[in-house]
Image 1 (tube, rainbow, N blue to C red):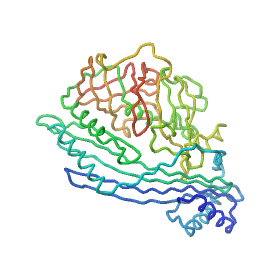
Image 2: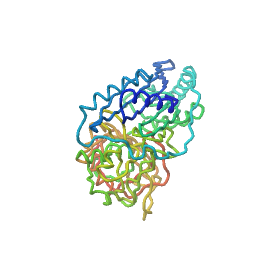
Image 3: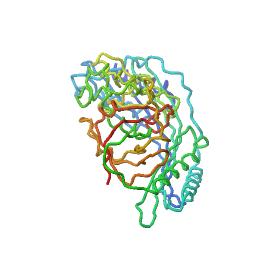
Image 4: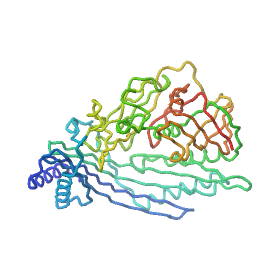
Length: 446
């Protein structure tokens, strides 16, 4: 997998021998090691090496067949090409997938940044120490039930019979800590934190455990909140969770399948407050796991989705772009069906706000740190949500943890009710986003 030219030559020779004129191959190799601990002892150690290729073949009738295999040597590749060719005669007749018109376009000059992997014992030592410090951060913290330290090396490649040949390699390491409290007469409280970096020696483990400790401790003194309408501030993680839950707004495949809140005619309409701008930017400097191309070989790039509240773009594969008279955007995933998914969100202020707000002096404001049960509480096709959350009631710089509550509303109305987008961004697994203020949402207390 590491030598794209060798793979391309081998695929071309096999295809010629089989009489196949049109094909493409998407491949990946992932080496991953992860550890978990429990009370100072290793709980789980996992290591895996996963390699595979997905092969598509078009026949003289212009229908396409697809197959996948983990056998990436020449014999496995030959069998995959042969199988895909046989399957092509049973392929769909309408909207047949095709090569991306940008599969041979230049891609960004992005240096491969692979790091030497740390040993399992190093990973365990760092995670055990982090757990120990987190447990000692406060007497009420009795456990870190969810934790993990993992490192991943990945290689990806794409080639086709028209001369496309791309490859890239990446390394990154991540840590997750989620602590839980136990106190007599009180409900257990919990909070977590996440960090990612190129390598173990660059990973901000101290920052991760400090954030997890501070959040957990801040939830110890909790109170009930009265039900009603509140001004709400979403953390970066919470707001991006909502955007992800309603990503059908921007997904061209969902729009074509009529499984979206948008239609092709929605482009150019005002769907949010002018204070909000939002794009998908796989090449954002903060995106450690950046991919240079998608499963069809289309280069990834910055795609504007909302500009000052106006819906400005959709996420496309080559097929959806062709059907909607647009350009592919680098968001295709190859499989039995080509799907479209986001890469890395970037939310930032749009128009200048007439008034700025701060949690330091805000009165009776709900700060939502993390949304829960998105799989159950989101009705993506109706645009509504009702979700439990972790957060605080903020009053002139004083924060009181909320015992138990849900936030509910309509997502499109929420977008139009944004009154302030802060300037300072925060990195999350889904992207980069500042805190977002919404004028009024329904909060239901216990």
